[in-house]
Each structure stands twice: as structure tokens, then as C-alpha cells.
Length: 136
Picture 1 (cartoon, rainbow, N blue to C red):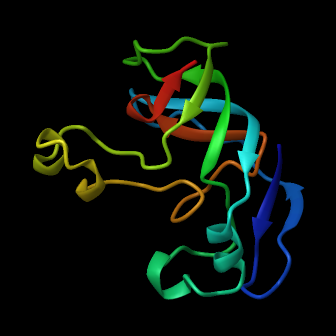
Picture 2 (cartoon, rainbow, N blue to C red; picture 1 turned 120 degrees about the horizontal axis):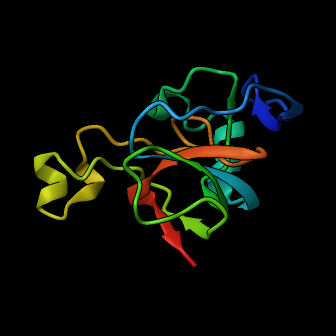
């Protein structure tokens, strides 16, 4: 699939072919990206201002403001089906840790932030989880 990847801070990201994301867990959802917003945070990352904060290994795919259509789902996903139009919450949380159970998802013990600390939506496909997809 095609994706825009950042290889080096202070350099322009490049379009290139990368492997498609795979379902690795029962609550995984892969979304075919229909739109990915570019915000100032993305530019700060390119400028290297978040290098120490994110700890992400380069190269990686940016894009944390995403929407599209469900492409594939894990075996335990029940809230969306293949083909559903969805918008993605940028923070992917587990729903099981103490913080999530208190409704304090921003402090999830195993959260991921696709486009910030994991591959994001500046690509044809992005992997997230069932908690992070909102059916439109």
C-alpha cells in the first residue's frame, strides 16, 4: 500500500510502498482511509519538536485525524462491520485497565496514538481497535 512516511526529522516525509497492517488481536479494526487531516502537531513532529516526547522509531506513518471505511475486523469486534463508514478517535485504549474503567482513558496503561507514537493514517489503511472507531 502507499503511505507517507517520515524517515528523518527536519526532512520532508515521502510517499512509498509499505506492507499493509494486519489484524493481530481480536478487537483490531483496519480502516481504509478516506480522509486524514494534517494539523500543526504533524508539522511539529516533522520539525523534530516531539522527538523526545513520542519516542517513536523512524521511519513511521503520521496522521492522527482519520476517517474512512472498515476494511477488516478482528474476531471479537461487534460494533462495526466491514464497509461501515467510521471516524477514528485518535487515542486507542484498552478499556480494561483501572484508568479506562474509571473513564480516565487518557491515562490508559496500554494506550497507543496512531500517527503520534505508532503508524497512523497518512496511508491507504490504518490499524486501530474497536473502542476507537465511531460508526457514522
